[in-house]
Amino acid sequence: MREYFRLVKLLKPYRHLLVLSFVLMIIFSIANALTIYLSIPLLKTLFTSDSTIPFIIPAQQSIFNSIRSVIDSYIFSSGSKYDALLKACVLLVGTYFIKNLIGYLQSILTQYVENTLITDLRRKMYHKFNSLSLKYFSRRKSGDLISRFITDVNSIQNTVSVTFTDLIKQPLLIITFLTMAFLLNWKLTLISIVIVPLSLQLIFWIGSKLRKYSMRIQEKLGNFTSVISETIYGSKVIRAFSMEKSENKKFESKLKDFFRTKMKIEIYSDSTRPITEFVSVCIGVIIIWYGGKEIFHGGALAPEEFIGFILIIFQLMTPIKDLSSVGNRIQEASAASKRIFEIIDSKPEIIETQNPTVKNSFEQTIEFKNVSFKYDVDLPLVLNNVSFTANKNEKVAIVGLSGVGKSTLVDLLPRFYDPVEGDIFIDGVNIKELSLKSLRSMFGIVTQEIILFNDTIRSNIAYGREDFSDSEIINAAKNANAHDFILETENGYDTIIGDRGIKLSGGQRQRIAIARALLKNAPILIFDEATSSLDTESEVLIQQAIDLLIKDHTSIIIAHRLSTIKNADKIIVLHEGRVESIDNHDKLITKQESIYKKLYEMQFRK
Figure (tube, rainbow, N blue to C red):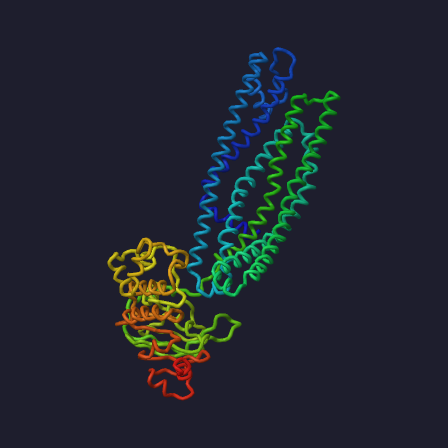
């Protein structure tokens, strides 16, 4: 319940609207009670055999009796039965109109608060996503995070309306109806409410079960959402390896697991209403029996008042039933809130100092000094005591066997991750002292796995900036050897390229990414195996674009194909997370038993 109360605190900025909503609920409750009371004079008018109906002043004076006196005075003052019927009908229609108008306004107001809160909550979650390091996402399934963002937030949305509608309106209605019932006949009312606590204890037990299974259902949903996400992303691989049946089996397992948990929730949730309704009917039958007995023996309660009392009691059952489900829904939302606040409370691992240095240019050197890194506390080191220096306008290559830590090394430069030991300096300034925005503005990054967005080619090239002119975008595309194929697409630069750029080939996506880096014109360029998975023609075009791009820039290139980095000023050879050697191609190739020589001989063996 702690998460639920924390959720309620988020409504504080909207307290003035909630107060207004509360006032409207009070008016609604009074109007609702009045519509029930008006049935008494209406029944009296219909079932009195005399043509005239005398107006009788209640013997005991109270607020309730005074209100009754005013209403009865208006209806029965003329004494005519037909006039009384007309006035009772007019009052009933007018009261119902006011009740429904107030109920509508209150509902719209509550919906506004509810949807504003949910919008704010999603905004907080999304902003938090963009503040977290890559390490956070590497530990979690994307399907589970999406499930929290959509399904869990929807669960909370239902609870907000419960909290400020059912949790307030229904008790108000219950109090109003009980007050009227007590004033009509207190004995019958006591009999009515004596059985209710018995059902409440059972309802609370059901609620505790629901909380437990609600936590599980969100986890199960996240699991099979992840399977769907992986199936869409890996559809080509699944078909290439004929794994459709295996993937179907995996999904069926997750789906059945979700189904079983969902059914347990439905069993407990749906049992609340029939239990409450059965208890309500039992109460109603006892009231009818006792009230009828009193009337037969000449009790103080008039027949029309007894029927009115029955109507009040049965009207009382509706808010009791609605209120009985509130606890269940709060338990479900508490489970969802816990998963959402887990995201919101996550602390970014990459943080700026209080007064970061803003640096927008690169003048001298990049220095790695005794840098070590691992992805998690329990995992081994990926990089171990790495040290090297890259000078301005140098072409630096990083090579080594797969999994040796090449990509991890360059990911430390823009602080996608932070080293566990050692420091990185740019122009003698520790990168942890720089503002993240100014640090990352110094890097243009092109990777093997290109990230493009479901937007136009123009927007993808100019990503991150809105002040580039069309001529600048086109010039960047030409330099990246992308202009010609762009013009051949459906709408040229305004062509939507689909999710992850699916409408483009691998080489075309790569050239769009290079155009993006060209347009950014950052002083330091990082190429992470930018040509390793391309055909020969695409590789030639992209290599030409890269050669143009790195001119007059400092570049760090990760490459499996050593032919692309033979002319590098400096080649850093990594082996088992350490720097084995640093030199140019001509000198490295002469070193016997070196990793670089082995890689070179494997690639160029005749």
